[in-house]
Image 1 (cartoon, helix red, strand yellow):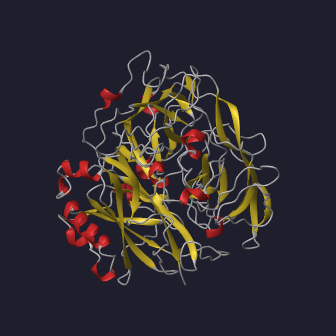
Image 2 (image 1 turned 30 degrees about the horizontal axis):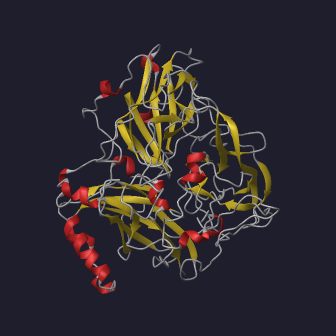
Image 3 (image 1 turned 135 degrees about the vertical axis):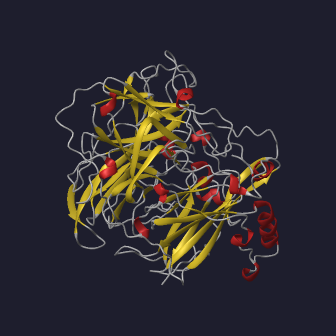
Length: 618
């Protein structure tokens, strides 16, 4: 974690107009491919050396749908029963023994790590029953830190295998959103502990819940993952994450048929990118001590960020995929704890979609930058490379953008060795006419602007918490957008890290980024907080601008649920606040209304305490 003090020393905080760390590289820009290529033989970096390119890329299984009636709308719905459980059969690499992992299972369908992909039809609800059949003790029990978050808050959160599933990117009723305090534990003597905001639709067992997902949104790749309070950094790390694809007639997301002439199964490949460090016994290593030598440091275990030394894709280290000489559709999901990936293949890539579905038009890229939780929908053509080997490489530092940790350069390989099975009849991506896009821009003249300040709390040079608006998560919420209103949110980053900011409930569009004087604004902000937070005296970040606004990049023009908020910039987004049918009000986190959260998707930041509630009011 690059602290605010370190960031200011870099000299870019007062005039960030020359700092441009984001986006994709256009034709002719430099990206030093050769320096990222693996040397023949062993790749070091994990606890033991691993031989690259010997394990096949796993294909994530598809969940099988039953049928039911949606409890929220009374309409026909697809139905899934799943369980979270522990197994000891997953092997992350040929050179590593099988290791204990967590995963989502549907009966006997489940890889053991991650889970089966749910394929949903646009506008048809999905009803999900998820049961907690994990052992009482978490897989990383000794990595739990009951000191993080608001002082004394952790007394509400026992160190057991608590789970709570969130459909990331879903337009979901609040009672089904996977609020971090709606967790539930495994059975203990026939009973299960529940969080303060546990809510379930009818039919749930003691150690489970039933949720409904509306799917009233464009086709695209979502994902479901654990969201339990103060364990979010540990539960997806253990394996609780999986894909969720919405399909309709304009698109093909696995498996289905669509109206666009783009690659379909088996040429439509999901790639879940993560990074891990491994013990000699094959298990994943997660730190159990903060490493801070100051005896007064309040967190004995928590670390600001986790960066593994080994890349894994779909749960395998350095995998290889054999492909035909033809066009493929690659669905990238950054499922890492906190690592950004700047990805390149050494061949042209066409970005056709991100989190909220398809872009207005295909975007050419030599490489592109993915923050944690972002998804990129990319078409590549292997036809000119028959018989060759195409490496997927990464050039992003960690932490991003100013970190000095070693880059993980080698991710996986595509071997163009399979015979072409019939003529490739898909259109070249540059010729695709994507479905009509309905933008939120221009912004309505009466749109409210909401400033959200991303900061940190420090002890000397050591961060003790990542924080939003200088408030702990458990302090009552004051973000109350009105139902059906459109708002501009300004992410004001005072830290040295880029933060992938994720909003529950609503998709948004990126407007622009404005460089600002971090040092001057920080001084005025701190003084305003110390003086009691008088609303009329709150400093307005746009008045501290140091240069012209930079419009959203071409690959950010579509709808998104996660945005990169760069240090030294005010990142401006626009979104509309409506809720699906059957949404239930509550007053758990503030005034009565429809309660959701927003947060940084660097999981160690989210857990301590870069997350805040918001309530949509009527």
